[in-house]
Amino acid sequence: MRLQGKTAVITGAGSGIGRASCLLFAQEGANVVAADINEESAAATAEACQAAGGAAIYVRTDVSRAEDCAQMIRRAEAHFGALHVLFNNAGIMLSEDGDAMATEEDVWEMTMAVNLKGVWLGCKYGIPALRRAGGGSIINTASFVALLGAATPQLAYTASKGGVLAMTRELAVIHARENIRVNALCPGPLRTELLMKFLNTEEKKQRRLVHIPMGRFGEAEEMAQAALYLASDESSFVTGTEFVVDGGITAAYVTPE
Ligand code: NAD
Image (cartoon, rainbow, N blue to C red; front, side, top):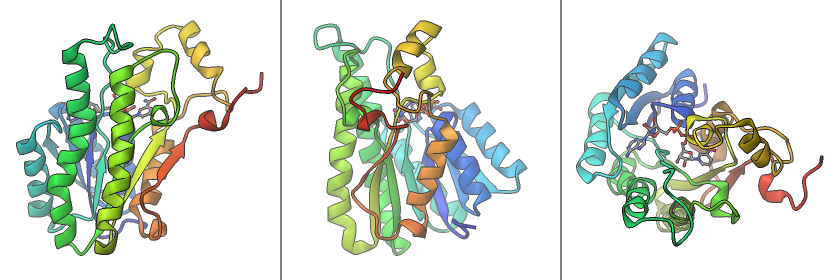
């Protein structure tokens, strides 16, 4: 098992990438702390991990609030003894997010609070715990939109993910000698709640699929597999990367018919 004896905190654990990662990490022997603002869905994820024979607890956590993040890390250490993996994955994409003119201040601020400040707060409280454990792995979920511009704008979302990428690089450099690795996961378009809410007609889905060389959306489970590699010792010399898992979207100029 690839995460035997390790404890992992995963945010956004109630759905999509977060839930799939909790299940996979638990299967691979990790003690899982499922953190989500939605308590019910976090609890359901922890139960599913337990039902599959894993060790898991849940913590209601709003990653944009410092006290919640501090509590999330405290619960992990109190329950499982140490923290080895921190997966800062929670994120939102608001429907009112648009171009520079259309995006309102509250939409900008909320997006930044969850997607960018939330990653920083996870690190603020998580890094001391990783130090106490003698090191570990941090994975921050960014996006392919941190690397490419889109003509269908979601300016606040894109800017927040660019921030996650830049912050990840700097964290990686700062903590490299402490045996703490920090990598960003950059998913392509996925068939999860977050995106399917927007691409809610067949026409909208097809318009997005045109850009993906593999011709399909990614699955949360495929992101979980990438996160597992970054979490495990198999990636022991990997830090500061933008780990792109995107069906080829960032490689394409023109995609095949
Ligand atoms: P999802 O909507 O299925 O899951 C996101 C989870 O985050 C939900 O359970 C939600 O309750 C939780 N959450 C929202 N706000 C929170 C907060 N303040 N504190 C704690 N939890 C909160 O989405 P997903 O597709 O699994 O997305 C996970 C991450 O992947 C996000 O950071 C997203 O931006 C990123 N991403 C998604 C895609 C995609 O196409 N779906 C592509 C690239 C990147």
